[in-house]
Amino acid sequence: MSARGDARATAGGAAAAPGAELGRAPLIALAGALTIAFSAILVRKADVHPVTAALYRCAYAIPLLAALAWRERRRYGPRASGQQRLAVIAGIFFAADLIFWHEAIADVGAGLATVLGNLQVVVVPFAAWAVLHEPPGRRILAALPLTLLGVVLISGALEDGAYGADPRRGVIYGLLTGLSYAGFILVLRHGNEDLRRPAGPLFDATVVAAVVALAVALVLGVPDLAPAWPSAAWLGTLALSSQVLGWMLISVSLPRLPAALTSMLLTVQPVGSVLLGIVLLGEHPSGLQLLGAALILAGLVSLAAGRRASGVARHGDPQEHVEEDLRPRQQAGQEERAAHEPRRQAEAPRDARAHAGEEPAAAASGAREGRSGHQGESRSARQPPSSRR
Image (cartoon, rainbow, N blue to C red; front, side, top):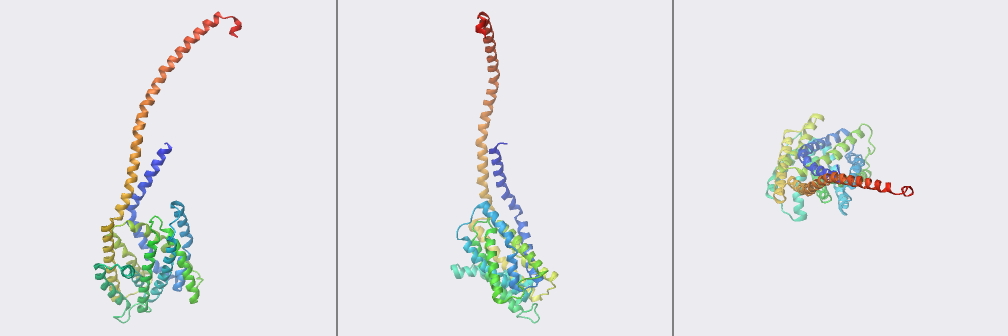
């Protein structure tokens, strides 16, 4: 195969690969959601200070994220100036998110703390209202009472003997988790306009979060800043599974999914964390607390479905956009092949005619050479011997 043919085959393979990935996106997103569902479980198993858990979740993930970010930079070139500054701000929010969330896990349990941490879906529209003066829609206002009632039920304010060391303080930490996580998501999205590069911005934010967590640990005088075995192993598993694998799987898959499937996947992490906390950690939330978790999840699904549906109505389905981006490339490849095909067809008869003409020419040349040879011999026979030498 020629070099040009190799190039066309390579281009065709590159164009076909993203289309194949679209079919795998739901499974990839589900795998990512199930992976991060274990995050709170691993934090509890590590049994270290909340700030220590935040520090080593980020620190252990840095080498692998650095390799992935370097690969993206080598493949796509450097990111636009200013995006790394936004990633620094995102890292500060992320450090606060992890610390508050780990505090909530200690106070109200792994499952309920994870449900509270997902309140960022409610926080983001109101943050946009306060900062960007964009009023929240009707669906958000309708879902707000559900989520607020769920928060009250999880806090144990309406019952005695609610699960958790301090469920009311855990709810406060959970709300702070939602606020800081909302800031992290908003800033990180603005700092990562190229969806092909999930690792670069996440690497920058993770490095900053590790530095911030270390500073907070030093200020608070955290006693277990150098965790021993097996805590270090649990933290290493947390870093590689949740911070690297889970985040990367979700980042590359969720933008390609339709609204309904995204809403379903949104519930996998909190529901999975509640069930895993009950099975693996022996947590026993009360009936009212579980009802509160269900109300919050119902509000989150309603908000996510409405937001993605309105986004599709305004901008189109992301999967269709990807397919539209691929279609011109495929058409260009087809046009290029069509342009070369007539040339090859025209060259084939010429080659055949040229090949067919070679034989008579060769025969005629041989005949001329034979006649000239005979004539030469008869002339040379008449010449003196000196001339023949």
